[in-house]
Structure formats: structure tokens, C-alpha cells
Image (cartoon, rainbow, N blue to C red):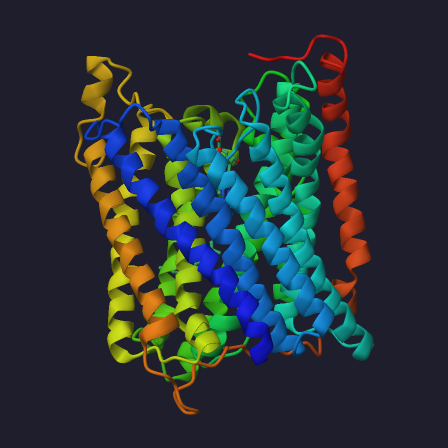
Length: 547
Ligand code: HAS
């Protein structure tokens, strides 16, 4: 990576890990509150901490990390940034950071305890929404400057497919920009006027629908960079190659098409949307499972081919040949393994009728801790172990590698305990997002007394997770400032696997086709139901719903 391009990536990482430390501390407080072991002082609110926890980890940590990864990877695969691209990356970073600080100040001030999903009828101070708008604009500036870098590369390499990393980064940015249109619309036209008192009410159903138009693809904005690591980085670390260049590109294209017109699967219990449109979006949700199945298949193929190259025999002999002692690989492998139950849980959630059982219970919290909280987060940890040394020129020493193993082991155990308890408690009816966990009823309290179906188990898992997070931040600080400087031989390279694109159809990189089809699907899934929602409570009708 060009030396001049390293700094902006490092600044993004610095923000990411600061948010990570505070966010995980808020998580620790959460599990103790739910376990009734902690009573908050009057000036601190349960929902305030829950909002901070969700925002700092799910939104701030992920987004800043993702842009650091993209900036480093785009510079690595397409060459050094030009001065304009570099400048716009910095401007974008500054705007994103400014928005984040404004949001955080409002949450700390107790003016924005509206949870990370922030849809109506909960209302925050107007400046919270201004902060959100700045955050999105900042990410767009960073995203578009990377698109500019890519456009220059394509102009200079007419007729060639771009490197797989760059292709995937651009696909993710396209997904992010289209997804944000929903949240931008609700923040600018609904929340800001409402929160500053310029309008008397807000169409609640519309705000929730626009939020989830954004909220579901948001989870793929987190997942796709992890998939980039799985497809492009992991094969290099294990000494192999990308299994299939075209399959990898196809799966990313499918995410652009199917990850957006599916938001209603978060709203299956809401009466303001008719069943037909919920059903249609449920079907489309099942389509978005396919690229993940493609990814699972590609990963197994990559591992098996490499394991056999290394001499593995028999049905599973190749498994033993994989480089288990390399924490850069092992961390990401465990992350992948967590996504098998994580993805299965998602399929349960998306099944229209079964959603009735789990909606608004702790099950959902369990689900997202084994999707974004482990497959995504632990992949990011695995990347951190070499990305920071790569950017700072320090060594990932043997003793730090041992600590890294301890860190991923504790994260895995903590998450296993916490998320299993959350799933099971959810099935027994424990609600999410409330400090009143037992319905103050003896029967309900008795259900929650099992070994795993217990808020104490959840708290034990949560505590191990916080220790693991603190350990990770310790490793990050070492890799940034304190580890010995690397020389030419020990310098951590940015691993990019070879991907044979000679047989890959060129149309896979024709973005106009995919963006066009994506908008068609969005129009199909959303036009009529959104029109109906607006019709039920048109602006100026006095029929805005505020509770
Ligand atoms: Fe989800 C709720 C449906 C994936 C995150 N989800 C949430 C929420 C979050 C979230 C944060 O339909 C809560 C939102 C809130 O606050 O209310 N989810 C799905 C479906 C998928 C899915 C169908 N979710 C994710 C991912 C997330 C995420 C990814 C974050 C990154 N989700 C739902 C639904 C709800 C929901 C409903 C609403 C529930 C409600 O009522 O509130 C699919 O994308 C999943 C497909 C994935 C697979 C797995 C493939 C496996 C792979 C691993 C291969 C492993 C290898 C290693 C190679 C089919 C790729 C081998 C190792 C060995 C040991 C063998």
C-alpha cells in the first residue's frame, strides 16, 4: 500500500477501535442489567446504554473498519490514490467522524435514547438526526472517492475485468448507496422536520418501512467486506487460490439485486402492510440466501482443494492439513463456522409464520450476535492482526500471536454461551429490549431458571466477551505503537489471492445492468405498499400517527 494512503485507513481504524471499546463496555452493562445484578443510577438510562451499545458496535465500529479495509485494499490492488482521491477520502472521513461525534454527544446527553434502529415513534433531539445525516454523507464521500479511483483504473485498463477485491468493494459501495436512499429520505423529510417541531407528527409506518428498506441491506454492508476477506484474503493465507472468480463475482451481484427489496421481513407483525407484499418480500428474502450458499460452497471447495494439495487424503484428511496454527486463518475459520447456525437462524426468522414465535424476543438478539457479532466481527479481528502491522510497519510477534489466539478463543466461548442462552430464552418468550425480563411473574421466572436458559449464563458469556474485547484493544495498541519495527523479511504483507478471471463473463462487471435490475425489483416490492402507507395518512391530513 502506498505510504501516503496508509494514514486515512489508520485513522478510520482508530475510530473503529475506540468505538469498539466503549461499545463492548456498554454491552457488559447490558447483561448485568438484564440479570438484575446492576441497578443504574437515576441519571443513566437502560435504553441510553442499549442505544450506545448498538450504535457504537453495529454502526460505528463496522463502518469505520470497512472503509479502512477498502482504502487499504483499493490502494493495494489498483495502485496508489491520486491526490484528488486522497483528499476526498480525508474529507469523507472527517464528515463521517463529525456526524459520529454529534450522534454520540446526543446519546451521552440523554437526548437520543432511541435505539440503533431509531424509527418512530421514538423521538430524539433534532441534532441526533443531523449527526446521522452527516454520517451517511461522509460515507458516501469516502465511497464515491473510491469509485473515482476505480473509474480511473478502468479507463486505463479498457476491456479488462478489475481485480476481484476492487470489484467486490465497488459492489458493496453500490449496495450501500442504494440502501442509504431509504434512511436519507426518512431522516431528511420525516425526522428532522418532526424533531425540530416544523411538523406536528410523523407517519410511523412510513418511517419504519423506510428504515427497514435501509436496515436489511445494512446487514449485508457489514457482511460483504467479511465475504471479501473469505474469498480474496483467506485463500492466500492458506497458500491456495480463489476457487472460482465468476462464482465469487456472481454472489456479489446477487447481493446487489436481492438484499434491498426485502425489508418487510422485519415488519411481518405490523398491521399497516398487507400480507401480499409481506409474502412477496419473504420470497425475495429466500433469494438473498442463495449467494451465501454459493459462498459456503466456494469456501469448502477452497479448503478442500488446498488441503488435498498439501497431501490430505480420504474424505476429511485434508481438514488436518489446513494451517490451524496461523491465527489469521483460524480466527476467520471460526467466524465462518458461527455463520452456519447464524444463517440457519436467519432462515427461521424469514419464514413468515415462524417469525411470529421469535419476533421481539431475545432470540433475535442471539441471531445478530452470531451474524454481525461473530462472523463479521471476528473476521475483522482476523484482518486486524495483519492489517495494522501492514499499515504501521510493526511486527505481529509470536507472543502477540499467542494473545490473539487467547482473544479469539475467549470471544468464541463468550459468544457461544451468550448467544445460546439468548436463543433459548427467546424461544421461552423472554422479550428483547427491556430491563423487565421476567414479566414479574413466577411461571415466567421459572422458565428462565435452566442452565442455559438463564440470564446468568448470558451475563457470564457477556463478561467473557468484554475481557476478550479488552484483550483485542491491547493487541491493537501493541501493533500500532509498541511492537518491534519489522524489517523487509518480517513485514506483514497485504495478502491477495490469485483469481483466474480468464473465463469470467465480462457482463458481470456491467454495473448498469445490475443497478437497473436492482431498481426494478425495488420498485416492484415497494411502490404499491409505500403508496398505500402514505395514502392511509397523507401529509397535511392530520392523520399522522404519533403515540
Ligand atoms: Fe438477520 C434480524 C433474516 C443474515 C443481522 N438480522 C436481524 C437483526 C440483525 C441481523 C442485526 O427474516 C436484528 C434487527 C433488529 O434490531 O430488529 N438474516 C436473515 C436472513 C439472513 C440473515 C434470511 N442477519 C444476517 C446477517 C446479519 C444479520 C448476515 C449481519 C451481518 N434477520 C432475518 C430476519 C430478521 C433478522 C427475518 C427479523 C427478525 C424479527 O422478527 O425481528 C440470511 O442472509 C442468512 C443466509 C446465510 C446462510 C449461511 C451460509 C453459511 C456460510 C458459512 C460457511 C462456513 C464455512 C466454515 C465454509 C445460509 C457462508 C465451515 C466450518 C465448519 C465447522 C463445518
